[in-house]
Length: 175
Image 1 (cartoon, rainbow, N blue to C red):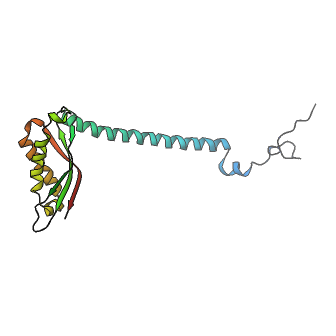
Image 2: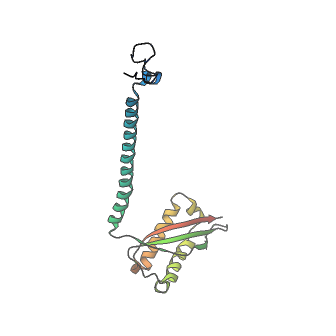
């Protein structure tokens, strides 16, 4: 019968076919299959945690958007106006305001510029902006007060447009 040879790390020469001592890597952490199983388990836990975090982030972002959309009833339409540059009423000093304004409307408008009362909109906005004082605009809450004043004037002067919000897209006070 022919002699069967085995790999040198599994059988020691001259020990009668007894298995050799385990190698140092297997002795420290157990068998290689146990190490792979532990690594796989850790990777599965990490992947599950990432999936849960992604789902939570998705719902956090989309529930806020749907709540604001459902609270208004309809999606808000915006109408951007050209930039305004106005001299401000300052006490003995020259100052000006450069501001970009976008209006939030409750209904959709025909996007033809001829059909919109842009000149009247700009007139109302310019009258409110030019009455502002630079120190008021730079104070805490000055922008919010100006925004509220603009909204009130626009809603009073042009109620048919359905203006619900005023957004500043640019705001610069130069003194």
